[in-house]
Image 1 (cartoon, one colour):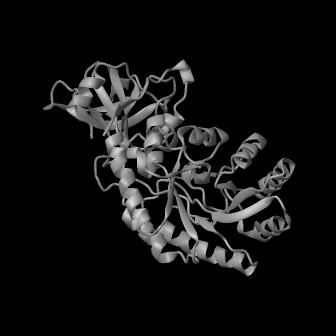
Image 2 (cartoon, rainbow, N blue to C red):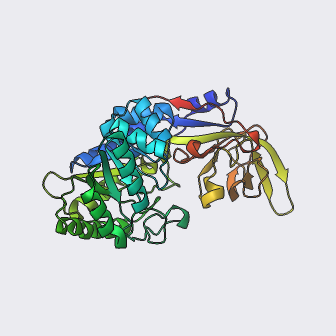
Image 3 (tube, rainbow, N blue to C red):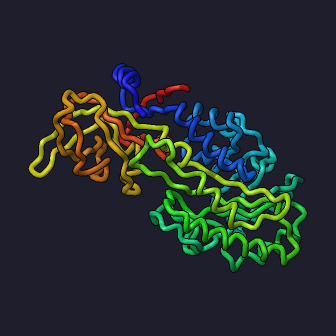
Length: 385
């Protein structure tokens, strides 16, 4: 929640910039960890959601591991202080250098996404005379029922090893002296708001585990991925999201073997509600059918509305009158018609220079920012606990 003292501090800064409420982040991570600890589950934070240093340091200090999808993220996790045994590394297009880095640092697992990648990892590990600890990312063909751009668990998606390839993959692993198969990995999508896809995933995980056991393979861990969504319209709700029911689904439906660990990769659900994009009104442009609120922030700072048609709450923090409201199309300055944060948005009557907050932007906001149009994002601002 943005406070009056925050707004006063905002007014002294050059916009646009991201504001992170680290007190709110701390509470959210504590809730997630308490819910997971109840069942002995292990949590990793997805760096792709937010790689801001103070955010990562807080999450690391809470005892979470790191979920990485690039060599750059692996290096960042190590620099922040995540232990190698806490780092999982997924991604469909790992380069040779990234694979070497993961093997050299002896991270928790390289999550292999194809037979072709497995062959390369085997070769590189052999050249290094090291064993590569791997997990197999399997495509469970489970519909996450979310935006098609962020669905990752269907047969048609590029992610993971398909069911028809599993036997060949197991055969390659069993014949290799360079590969140590430690677990299996799944991730069906992002911003999932119902529990039914996770229930379906549990059934698929149980069936797949039996298939490995029939081949005489014991798995030390299962990584069920992440994907838990948030309510973007209620960023200040203390119980948003519902970690308790999320983890209860897995605790009740997955058949874990004695000593077997269950891991998760949470991103958006931990950080989305702790971050806001702060901007200023440049112009209030009158049109024939609508008025445009033109901000100094655009799709270069927050691309989610343009890319996913996502909806974020928008608030005028410094309106001169709280008794008048008006309808605006809230847009940015970038030379693209898709540079729009929302259409027909009801706000307090707004004027040039007013401070605007685009709420619940802590996930996939700053990490996806670009320098298109040679634009520059200001340094982040923080409220500490």
